[in-house]
Image 1 (cartoon, rainbow, N blue to C red):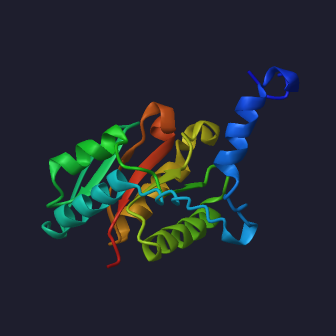
Image 2: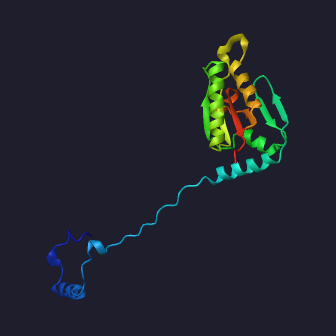
Image 3: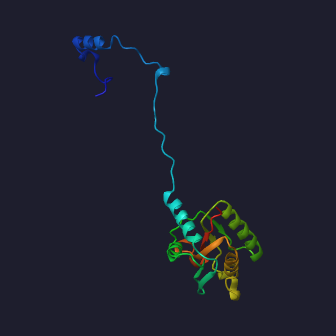
Length: 186
C-alpha cells in the first residue's frame, strides 16, 4: 500500500514518536556524496568467427600452390592444393561468416574486372577471410551463356590471394554467387 493513500490519522502517536527517535541523529545524503557504481557491459566478441579465421589460416599454411578444380555447367568449385577437405566442406555449407560482399551483376566485363580487383585487394588489406561475390546467373546473356560468371571465376583463379571458391547456398544466391576464401595478409 502506498503511504500517500494512508490517512495520516491512522498512524498512532506512539509510532510517530518511535520513528522520530530512530532517525533523529541521521544526516541527509548530499548529492556530491552519492556514488553509484554501475558495471559496464563487456564488449561483444565474435569468438566463433575468430576461431574460423584462425583455423582457415592454419590449414591454408600447410598447403601447396597447385590448383584443383571441379565444375559443372552450374555449380563451381575451385581450391588450391593442400587445402583440407574440412575447410572446403565448411565453405560449401556456408559455415564461414561473410565479412564483405560485392554485387557485380548488370556490369560490363571491364567494369566488373576493375570492381572485383579493387574489392579483393581491399578485403585482403582488411584481413577478411571469407567474402561473397555475386555475379548473377547469366540469364540475360542469351546464347553466350553466363559471361560475367566465367570471367569472375577466371580472375579469381588467377590471384594468389584467393585460396578457394564455391557456388553459394541457394539462400545466398545459389549458382549466381560465390563464397570466396581469401589468404590472410598477416
